[in-house]
Length: 61
Image 1 (spheres, rainbow, N blue to C red):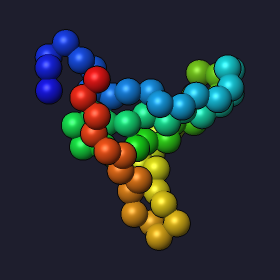
Image 2: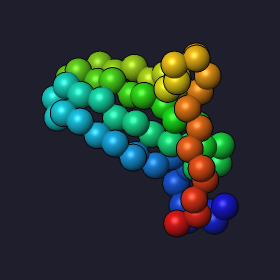
Image 3: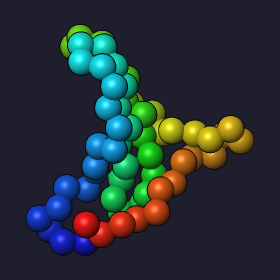
């Protein structure tokens, strides 16, 4: 991976002051869910129905 690219990419965003975002690790493809409300927030691995991490194909952009 090129040094000029960020490791994480935001692929989804909903809300402004309170909302959610989905971030993808560009090296592993693992998806993370970030929920925020004002100055507070939390990050967790995004899981599918069977409890396994959601993994996206890695695309070099």
